[in-house]
Length: 306
Image 1 (cartoon, rainbow, N blue to C red):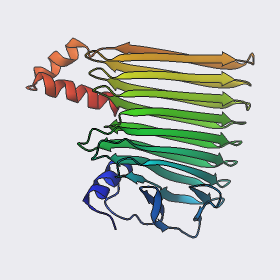
Image 2: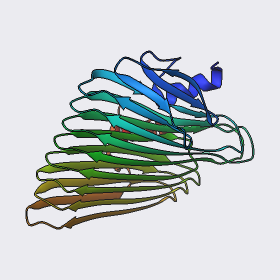
Image 3: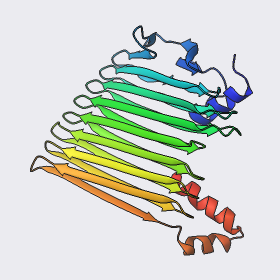
Image 4: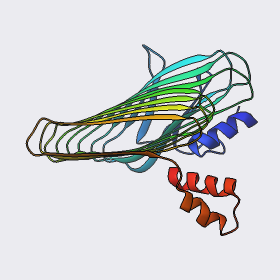
């Protein structure tokens, strides 16, 4: 069922070597090819549009869901709509992501729209990784949209990573936090050649004592271009922090536009943004330990994006 290319893509975006245990759904070239459920996590195919509903029962603990997407056909434009019901008091890991192998001259594209409902007191960790490969000239395009509603006392932790090989991407994330809800976002992104990436993160802190932290790190190489719009709106007593750091190299371009808006006198919001090159003293120190300049540079970049 899974060929060698499929397994390489699964390993890159979901850390899987083969069909996983527990709850999972694997989508390949626009169709589901394998699925598993558990007593506490059910996966149901939508009837009105392409996609699935992932239903986590209340108070489910220590379980995970893998929902990777594989695209290995040129000319494919795949769109999927997934809805997640994370039951009250549960604590689960959701591993998503898409790997594209494009061997041809036509573009291959996947747009994933994920809608999360994190119920009262629930905790969600969501890992989304994107990866592209293939020697063809066709573009590899990924456009994820993530919408999250976190109810009272809930926690959403997001790890969003673009590993390499994605020619065009627009990443759109919207989060709404209620009373005592918490959000942690870690975004890591790499572009090179003439790739372009746009990341938009909008967070609304509507509930009393809600908190949010966004950490975005990126590396732009060659002639690639990156744009970041990180927006946080405090509408109650709340705390929020945005940190956006980028390393720029060669003839790349990076634009970072953090925005904080307070609509309540007890909203505490902070933003930081920095763009710069690799410090020469870091290279010198590593080269003094025996690394070549290229090896030293790679070591610094890997550590930065970790």
